[in-house]
Image (cartoon, rainbow, N blue to C red; front, side, top):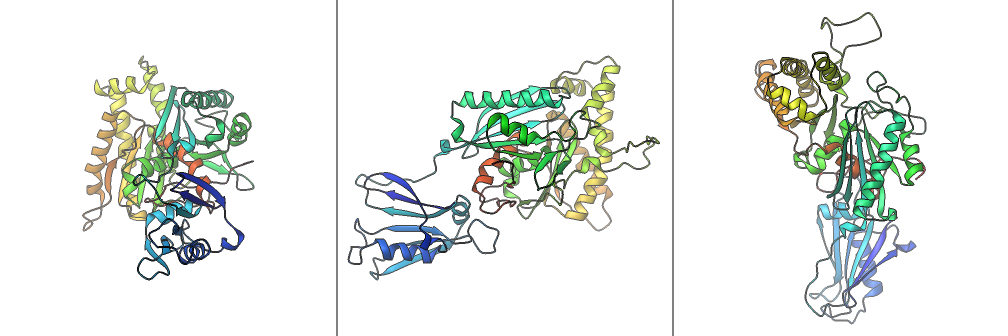
Length: 454
C-alpha cells in the first residue's frame, strides 16, 4: 500500500503516514497542489519555515504505462506567491512509484546546513539460494542489492530431502552471520534447474528433469521452505535467474535486449526483451539446453531424445573421466585437466561449442538481440575458449551479405549471478504494484512472481 513520507527538517525526523482516502486517486501535480493548498498558510513567506516542498510521482509511475515516469515538485512560489509545480520525466518517478511512495513532504527548516535524504540500505534484506547438480550457493543482500553474506558448498546430485535440509541450514546461517531479525528479511528467492512447471492456481513449482536430477519430481519447494522458515519464497529456473543477475549486477544493466547462455552443470538460457525478462507462456523461455540434436549418430530406439544440453552436462563428463581414472572433485580439478590438455575434456567442450553455434545463429535471426552473454560456473579459461570459438565460427555461418550480428560477450555478473538474481526477487516483488512485471534497467530489474501463503 502506498505511503506518504513526511520529512520534518526542524525536528530532523521522518514519519510515515497512510494515504488519506481523498488523496487515493491523485498523483503528480494534482497531489502536490492539493497538499500545498491544505497545509501551507496562504500568507506565509515562500522561503520561510511554513512553506513546504511536496514531491509526488504520477499516478501511473512504477507501471509499464507509456510516458508514466513523471515526477512533480510543488510548493508556494517565490515568484508569484501562489501554488506552483514543476515536473520532469525521470527514473526517480518510476523508483518512487515502485517503492509505493505516494508523496514526500519536506517541511520545517534546517538550522545547521543541508541534508541528503536517502533510503537506509539496512532497512530490509533478501535471501537467494541457487541449487544445481554440483553446487548450492546462498547469498544475503541488502536493500541496495549489495551482497552482504555468501555460503557455497559443493554437492553431487542431492536428493530433495537432503537439499531442503541444506537450504534451510544455509539460509539460517546467512541470517545469523548478518545478525538480522527475520522481520527485516523480505523473502527468499530459489533457483533450480529448468524446465519449470506452473501448477493449477498459477503457483510456480519445480519440475527438475528427473533423468538428470532423480528424486525431484514435483517437490513443493515453495511450500516446504515457507513452512520451515516462515518467509515468502519465490522460485525461478537458474538460467533465467543468472540472466536477472546479469541485468542487475553485470553489463546487462545497460542493454535492453540480450540473450544469456548459462553453462553450469548443464546448459540453459534467459532472454531479456525491451528491458524485461521474457519468460514465455510456461516460464521456460530460453531453455535451449533441450533443443534436440538430430542425426548425430547417437540416437537410441528409446524414449531418450538426444539434446544439446548433454554436451554440457558436467556429470556425464565426470563419469567419462572417472572411467579413465581421473578424479574430479571440483571445478579447480576440471580446470587443471583442461590446462594440461586432457583430450577428453578439451574434445568435450570443443564438440559442445560446435553444436551450440548453429543454435546461436538461430537466436540471432529469430530474436536479433544486441548482445549474447555467455556465463555460468565453468573455469575462466574454458569460458574464454568457448567465447573465442563461437566468435570465430559465427561469421562463417551467416548468409552472404549479413556482415554483423549480436556481440558475443563474457558475462560480468560472476559465478554467483544465479544466486544474486533470485535474491532480488523478494525485494522487488514487494515493491511491485502490479504482479508479473519486470522493472526496467534504470529502476530495479526484476520480475515479480505470485507466491504461496504470503
